[in-house]
Length: 288
Image (cartoon, rainbow, N blue to C red; front, top):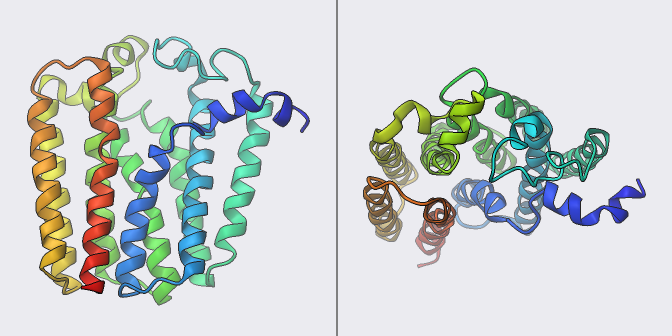
């Protein structure tokens, strides 16, 4: 355990401590569900639990991904300096870090009701299988979407102690959103992935990836509009949906060109603002 301090910089890189947009992409849909389930009045404890839980599970997911992919990462220019790929950390040390974050995540879900606690094990299953999905399917982004959506179900269950159609509509919206932005992310490594035999939607759709991303984004808007109808949300929410629609159209058409890696990464990362805008629309819906 001494290595946690001695190799703290490598551990920080392992969990992407300086790149918390991943945590935000996991957190925002969870907060959407939490706010709708509580009709705009989420408890402070639930907000804190799901913020911490998102950080712990995203960090654990990064560790699991790097443990599964360390041999692939060493062959990809963008990932070759990750701490397991360049041997700054050993697999045993990474396993200790993983155990710590999974334990922290377990402590947070133990603070929820029994129904939400039992559902949380499905989230762990999705997080475990995602790193291996890219070996067997060209649609690992769909698996990521499911993994990044389970907080939606837990948040609803924590508030209502039951489930309904609304959290599953939010889940479908988030699944399509994750498939869209992760396809953009996969475009950064498409050529390297082809060489090492890793599959992705970016490889599957090739030059038509911009059409696929546009299709995923269209479904995001469709499912979020259904959320508004079923939850009887006001015009301010639909204004937010209109805002993200413009954002999605811009991103999709931008992808028609062969973009440099830096631009692709910017487009991927800017999806955080989608989460912000939808969250703002929900908050103003209940407080105006």
